[in-house]
Length: 252
Image (tube, rainbow, N blue to C red; front, side, top):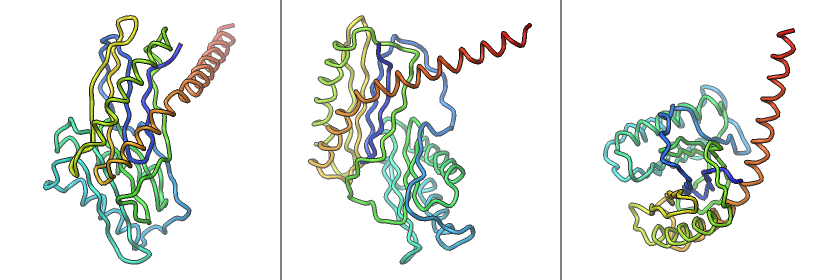
């Protein structure tokens, strides 16, 4: 039995695979789905780097000229230079994109205080900042799995065959995009009347071959989520059982 899952493999791409039984999804809250405080250094509070970082992130989510949802800005000089990339889903409005980037930026600054590099995102956007140039650069990490175990897949083999067929097709379509967009989305029928919906996306500064390779790598590691998800579900169940035992003890 496998869980519906969402994979982020941060060579700055987005792969989303869902198996849905037409269930109504709850409204998303502006809480990061994933984040990582990375980098080998830290900045001092009230330093020039911090001022440049705050100015840079603000300049991204207040920019009304960019319409394709991709931002690659820098701010500062020499050792205090900050580089940032932000990417939104292609199917949301520019206003919703900027709002998402603002929420993600604010959360990253709060969750990763004084880290020179951090990455994180919500359902609709991703934000990354660092003290090194990341423009036109293919990176395949860090990786994140965000999964939903409310929908189960009983025919794992059939589901995976359908998933691979869909993602193989979308990979080439997204890689063939232009300097404004590199994405593709579609759906495919899966066993037991389920439907797999997929969105794959690269930052448009990547070349065709880089985008294709990145999506290929991301698609290939999706099965790794099976073990991770099963482990997390087991821990969650065990934790729930312990809580029930403690509650029962309290009733005596």
